[in-house]
Image (cartoon, rainbow, N blue to C red; front, side):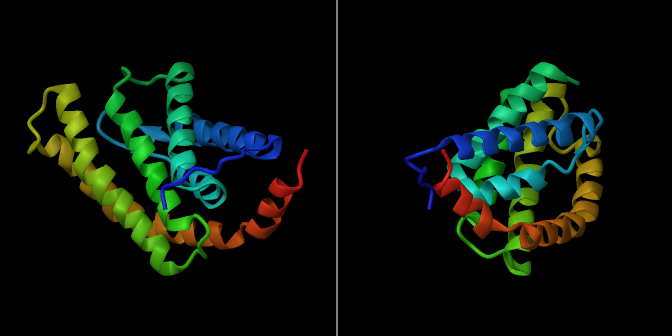
Length: 179
């Protein structure tokens, strides 16, 4: 499951660069970020990247997007834990969508896995470390719980709709016959 494609051609590299750029824009420019919460739709290009490139490349692309976004549009101090979150989140998307049909079940499970692992386990740890807050603080958990309850259905629906709308066969066929 966690294998890397051996050959990346010009089309695939340019597609990955485009998706990374879209992730940066959706996350850093069009996303909403406060001290303890971040809401963005950067998961949409991650879905496409996951469908095309698999878990490892999607994780690497998410890390590159995180680092570029941090260098160009920093809203807080750099913390490597969030870059780790980006990699793990990309791997989760790749696990659920690489060479698989997008269904309601895997759209929900992917969103749930990201919400639980990243939103409710890792991010609170990083925020507690960064802001010297106890891990049990409602300053950390209040916004996370509200965001999880609101974004889980929205993100599941968008994941399903976007995943079904993408002409993956056409994209993959073009990647095989490019320069």
